[in-house]
Length: 274
Image (cartoon, rainbow, N blue to C red; front, side, top):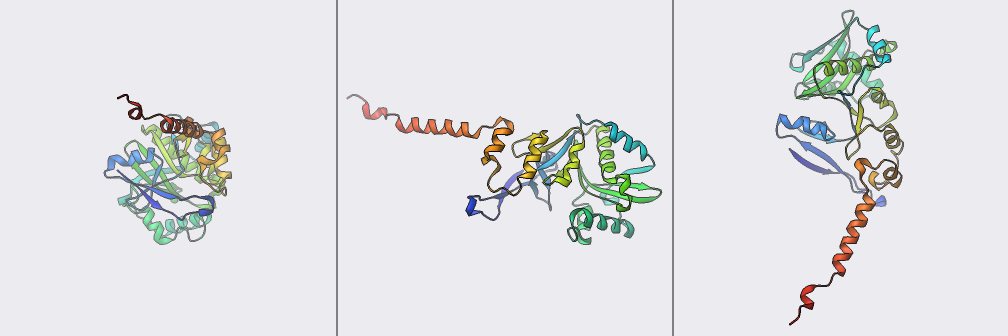
C-alpha cells in the first residue's frame, strides 16, 4: 500500500501544520489491513485516517436491552445482497434522502451522492430490511476478508418508536459474529450524537496510536473539539490517557540527554598521544 499526506490549511497562530493521511491499497488483501490501522474508505482509491470506530466481535454480546429489541422485531426480514444486484426504487430512494437530511443535514447527501454511495464501485453489499413487505432500512456495506464495514445507514423515520437505527446495527453485529467475522467497523465518532455506537459490547475507537476502549478518553476527545493544537501536545490528555503507554516528555528528555552527551563528549582523536 501507499501512504500519502495531503497538506491542509496551516494554523500559524498555534503553530499547527496539518496533513490529511491517505492510504491507497495496491491489492484487495491490503484493505482489511487499512481498516485495522484506523483508515476508512473515501472516494476510490483513497482511504482516510480518522477516529474510526468498530465492534470487536469476539467481545460482542447481546445485552438484555438488545435482546428485548431484537425479539420485539422478529417480523422484520434482513437480507444481505451483492451491490451489483441491488436496485434502489423510487420509494426507497425517498426514504434514504429524508433520513439523510434528518441525520446529516439538508443537502449533505443528495440524490447524486446517494447513487455513488450504493454504487458497486464504492459498496460491496447492501443490507436491506423489510417489514410487512416494505423496505424500512438499508445499509451500504463493505465486506472484505474477515471484516465488515457498516457504512451509510438509512431508515424510515416514521418508525422511530421501533428504534430502527439501533435495531439494524445490532442485527448486523449478530449476523457477522455468527458468521465468524472479527470486526464490524462503524465509521467515525466526533460528536455526542454518534456515541450510540459505544453502547455495543466490544466497542473501541482509534485514537491515533491504537484502539482504545476507554470511554472517558473518547468523551474527552469529543469535548475538546474546539481546542487548538495537537492532541499529543495536550498535557491533560497525555497525563490522563497516554495512548499505548507513550510518554513523549520522557522520550524528549532521553533524546535531549543523549544529544548533550554526544555534544560534550571529547573527540578522542584530538587527545591521541603522539
